[in-house]
Amino acid sequence: MRSLVTIAAAALSTIVLAGGSEPPYFPRTPECNNDLILRSVFSRFATYTPNVIGHPIAIVQIGNIGENRLELKSRYWSVERRYCYATVTTSDGRHRYLWYLIEHPFAFAGLGSSVNFCVSGLDPWYVNGADCASLR
Image 1 (cartoon, rainbow, N blue to C red):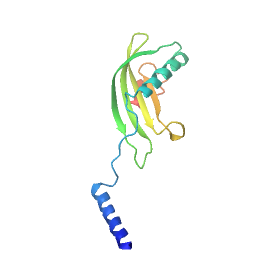
Image 2 (tube, one colour):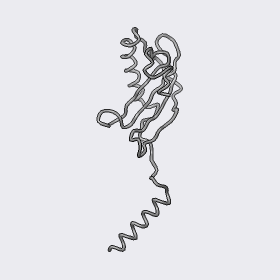
Image 3 (cartoon, rainbow, N blue to C red):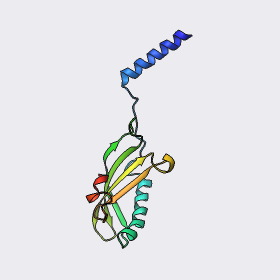
Image 4 (cartoon, one colour):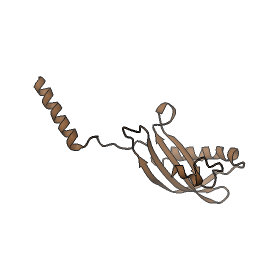
C-alpha cells in the first residue's frame, strides 16, 4: 500500500512540475461592463456630487467601456484588481472620462467586490491624483 502512495505522489509532483509551479488561475473579479458595478457607480456618483462639488450632476449615459489592465491574485497579493474606463455624459451636457477600479475579494469581511471611481474634472481635491491618475 505504501509503495502505491509513493508512486502516486511522485506522479503528481511530476505533473505539477511539468505544468508549471502554479495551476492556471481564472479571474473572479467582475467584468468592467457588469450591471451591478455600473449601478453602484451611478448611485454613488449621484450621492457624491452634491456633497463634494456643491451642485448635483448625474451620469446620464455611459459608453466605450473597456479595461486598462488586470492584476491577478498571487502569493504576494491576495486581492485581484481590474482597472476599467468608460466615457460618460453628465447632466450638464459634458462628455468626461470615468475611471474605476474593481477589487475582489475586498468588500465587507472579504466577501464580494469593492469599486472605487473617479470622473475626470470632477475630483476637486485630487483624491485620486491629477486627472484620476491612481485609477488608470
